Length: 174
Image (cartoon, rainbow, N blue to C red; front, side, top):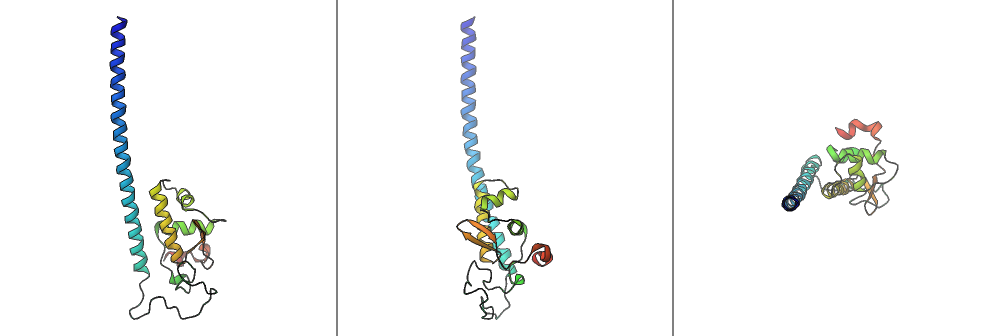
């Protein structure tokens, strides 16, 4: 009787091992599919943001791109990433919507520069590589657009010339 119980237990153990191996294989496949879907989502999100920014930043026909009138008010720091890069005020910056707006509002209310991972967490997004990399791309684009500055590699803060959101909320989101 003990021998038959041991045999049954051995078969049940082997069956459980087989099930664990099968489920482990399914998990690996699902993780790979999830990573692929997250990469695609990130690319689509960035593409949508880029198209939105391009649409919002369209210049009048015949205007020379990047010509803001020649006055250098930022001490010679004009260029990508400076607050005055082709901009003479908040109305010259692309309109903020969605996660870009949320990130700018968060950084405007923060007393210290934040990393992309910190922004993702603060906005309640899933803290996974795809989300963090997507946010990093958004933050870098916001630097180029003049909304943010990158004080040192990976540390983002609100740009000096960005108006207070309490005072200019409707101008920023219009």
